[in-house]
Image 1 (cartoon, one colour):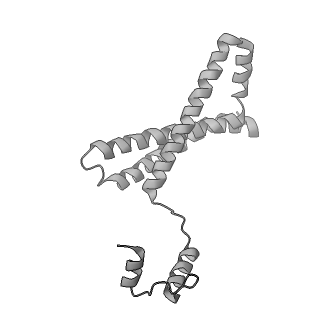
Image 2: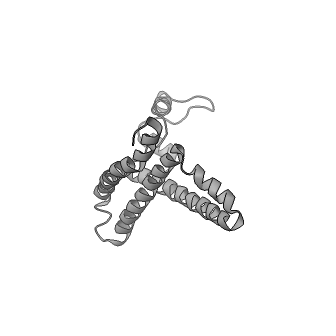
Image 3: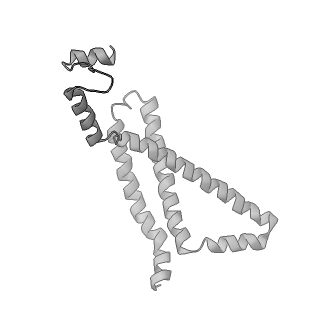
Length: 159
């Protein structure tokens, strides 16, 4: 059905001239502008976006890891300097982020496989998403604590 036919069917008169609109049409357009057209999505969409982002971040980490490991053959002194920079607190925070990204990517990958290959997967898609969120938090909280314990001790004193 065309746009003109659908607006006529809804009881709104079609445009009366090149530059004028009827009251009903302008109210609809105004309401659309006020509400915005930005799609906010549901948790499944954000899961898809986060899965892509964590995959790209993991890829770039592996790329940098291969490059810095290759330095051992080219210049052992440069390799040692690079390894020393990895012992800084900022890099420790990045390591926690990396572990979080890899963990989420792995858990969500299992969920995606279950949705694709398990006959009841689509039915349980949202509960599985919330389950991986709970597992992610349950693993990341103690993991981040132990990963950051040494850095916090160095920065703020302690053992």
